[in-house]
Structures are given as structure tokens and as C-alpha cells.
Length: 212
Image (cartoon, rainbow, N blue to C red; front, side):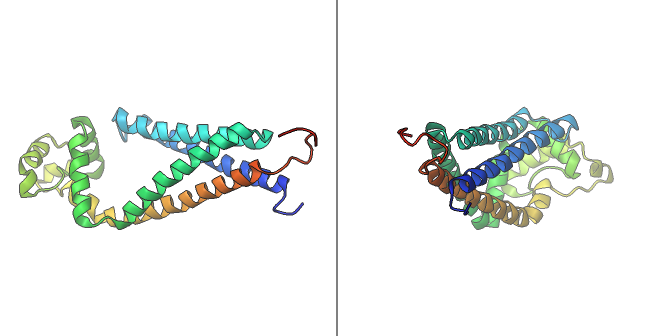
């Protein structure tokens, strides 16, 4: 059977969705592991990661079932949702690759302001730092965070700010995240192309007189 045939398209689409299922299960497992070991206590962060993993798992299951049964409606729903995810992920990935240091600082400040005190102290303990950025515009918040900081370095009367530590690795991390996201976004457009191609192919084992 040549690669452009019905069976090849079906197997390729099934394999791609199995990979998506594994990635979804991995996200759910990592979130549960982080919660279990106390690395992150914020229910919003844990819930967000689990929701993304569950959504990816659900879409992959829909695509897998649609591919196995050559179900026209499920394949149409699958390729529409996957194309929307591709557009969103492609935009986010390009933004990660294009962001500069000033934008990174603004993003950190806005994110830090949305975190509750428990999450902040967890990050300070894990990174062994205190506060976000010791700058004039956020000096009051920095001093408040410094008072509540549980990091070990505080006993030595000198702690690096968490913002400086994050920014030192932010550029590299954003490049990695943007590159990985960009790679997976192209696998999603590959999935859309496979779904469209497979959906329009005739099942050789089907009844020739059937409409679909």
C-alpha cells in the first residue's frame, strides 16, 4: 500500500493522536506529581495544567475514534478544533520568541501580582530567593515580600531577588518554549491536513453503493 493510500492516512492519523494522548497524560501526571510533592500549591496553576492536558487528551480521543471508524462528523470536529489550537499556539510561540527583557519584566510583574501569598512563598522557598524585583516602581511590594520570605538565604542576610534569577534564564527558557511550541504547532497543522485528506478518501472496504 502506497503512503498516499487510505490505510497509510488512517495509520498516520492514529499514530499522531496516540502521541497527543501521551502528551496529555504526561501533563496531567506532571501536575499531579508537582501537587503531591508540594512543589506548587496553587490550585489555579495545577488546575490550569490539568485542564490543558485533559483538553488535549479529549481532542486526541475524538480524533483517534474518528480515524478508526472513518467518522465524518468526528473528523470534521477534530480538524476544526485542532486548527483553532494551531492558530493560538502558533501566535503564542512567536510571541515567546519575540519578547524582549523589558516585556519580560512587565510580564513577571503582572504575573507576580496575580499570585497569592502561599504560591509566592512556595516559589521563594524552591528558588531560594526573596521578592520579585528590587526596583523603585515596586519597592513597597518588594519590602513586604521580603518580610514574609521563608527562603534559607534570608538567614545569611543576603538574598537574590526572584525576578533577577528568573530573568537570567527567561530568554533561554522562552526560546525553548517558543521552539517547542512552534514545532508542535506544525504537528497540529499536519494533523489537520491528514484529517482533511483522510476524510475525503473512500474506504475500500465500505459498501460501494453507500453515500459515505
